[in-house]
Length: 50
Image (tube, rainbow, N blue to C red):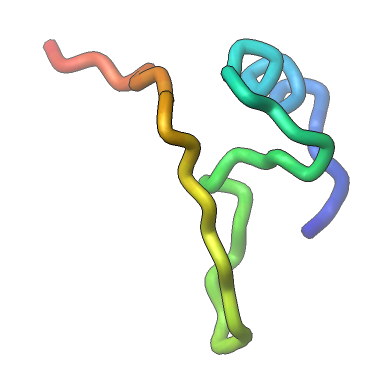
């Protein structure tokens, strides 16, 4: 994956349990390569319904 942008880093600053290799899932390109995704036990849902 390319380096994270400042905007992504700002969003990650609000994440609980952040690790050095943490990234937003929307930045990942899905390919045929093996992929392991770890979802933290506690998350914040930033989606809002109108």
